[in-house]
Image (cartoon, rainbow, N blue to C red):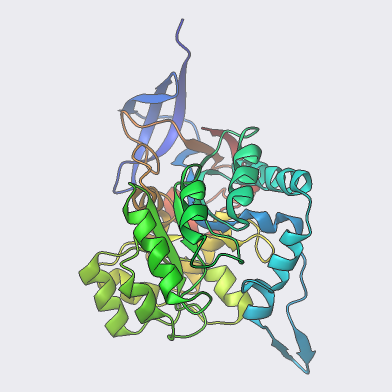
Length: 366
């Protein structure tokens, strides 16, 4: 006997995120039907979030010092926090037992699920062992993940190809730090190794300066992360080369590197999705990213919502996620439109984007 669910409410439907009042029919985990019909339900049925860039190994350290307080100014040093091989996170990861790392990542996976995320992409440090630790953590949680592994910090020209081949046996691609953090000849070797597979090559670029952007672009990456310092000439190249960008607004704000030119990238036709980045700095709460993008960046609410759902799925190659429509997997969250927080909103989509919180979620179906 097949398991069938009928869920009533205001549906954020299709690739254009239209509001449809009615119900969806879910059978064996697939959205079989979407019906438009008057309903008394105040629930909002929304596609789950796609968190397009994380480092969840950082779950073992969630309260790092951000810098020295000088009067009212906090000097944040990004390299001391996250730059390999001697940044704080890398020292902590190196000294964390594998079982503790797996357990900490498992707790973050549950936090993702409870805050409405059904899929994410993780840049997994620690070489093959880091990839395997995340695979182990994923066994206990029904969340889809694209793992972008990374060679260990001691990789050299002689062994990087062998290590990358091992990583790519268990990962979905490579996720490199930045073109200033590793020699370009090693990065080129890594890019060639990925090119020989059907997997993806992603790299951080332009987070704290423009110095690594051209080198990153020269590798013809499948995905770029951050591009906080991107200039108009870089944005044009992104469009011309059809390279999507994952932005991490809260992370960039906290580390003091500035805000990415999201509106300029969108206006130029660049595909843009959103991630929460390092767990040591931010929770995996995608509602917080949406509120920032809407209220601080001034981006249209529908565009913000799609960046956090469908566009992430598109960039990561998740073909049946990120939107509610017939035939897709039922990866949806049911939100209480009559919660103390949301009661009184007139537009369900704008209400979720501007003021939605995890405690407004009634249930998550993945």
